[in-house]
Image (cartoon, rainbow, N blue to C red; front, side, top):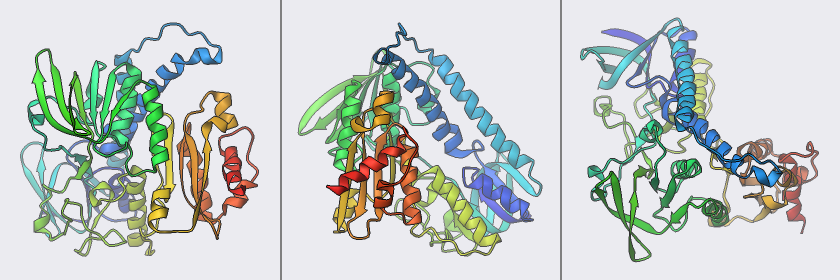
Length: 461
């Protein structure tokens, strides 16, 4: 039995940098990975999807090039080349991450499936079928999440896709039905629609992006429908049936009406669940909630002293940048003896539909629920000079501000480069810069961020 100072379970976007930094700080460290180094983000999340979305956007831009006076002619998608480019980028990122681990002194990479067999003891099932037992003073759980498969009649009898398996398709689906109208479903839905699939998105709530403000959801709904994507809301999928010629029939009820849709492919995008079921947490005493998310304090430590959890496995905002920030908090607190906390940290995020939806802070819905004294600044992208010049006029800019202090409470930027624009407002929020200062701020012309002048001018009325 080998003893380490630290064990990291899962080589994701928190686990990899944490293991390296702990080893570099003189801690004898082991990192265990059951699948592929890099986690969801590199292998079947952010990296591959955004690479393919870039290809899909090029198809779309080429299709409307004549609006800018450019005649391209017929457009053909070489999907095998799209996939190869994606695979090459993933391989580059994955190999770089693995090489970084292997070259770090004092760090041992173990490929296998980890399971607690004691409070600070981990048993690893290796690829050759043998087991290895290791112990440590500190243990960090970074096992992430996986696709949640809903309990729907007939689903287990059809060859459905997940956000992982859809990336391995070597042909564009003829008809793609997407179950779920949130980030994953919308990104994939628009992407494959632009590649040439007939896409239908089915959402149980009354709107897509049910957690966002209605005007933001309505704007994106209009954009997607303009691209010939069918969106069915208030819908419950009741049954899947496999037909001849590799067709799948989807039976659903929407607004008390039963409807049947035939598809060549079905993507399940109804959420994700934490990968804690096979961790053997009962042997170390770590507590979870009813969904399996690991319970933590504000410094990311579990109820068992010396055992921490980072990233999606702990619940809350499931974003790569949050997982990475988890690592920085844990590392600095343990090694540099700081007292950082996850309480009240900003949670920016960006959905990479086109246009992007960049978000930070509070929505109008949340401000209303909290009965705050707030104002709303709203600017359609059709009135943004940079958008008009670049032919990117879809979407809107929206900000929620405190009526008295004039501080920015939150923003939703549905726009080309919405993620970049919202970062400007995030910096303002973190620095306590009020909206009137941005209103009269000097920004380079002509940029998207310059239109924040115009956005907050709306509050002068």
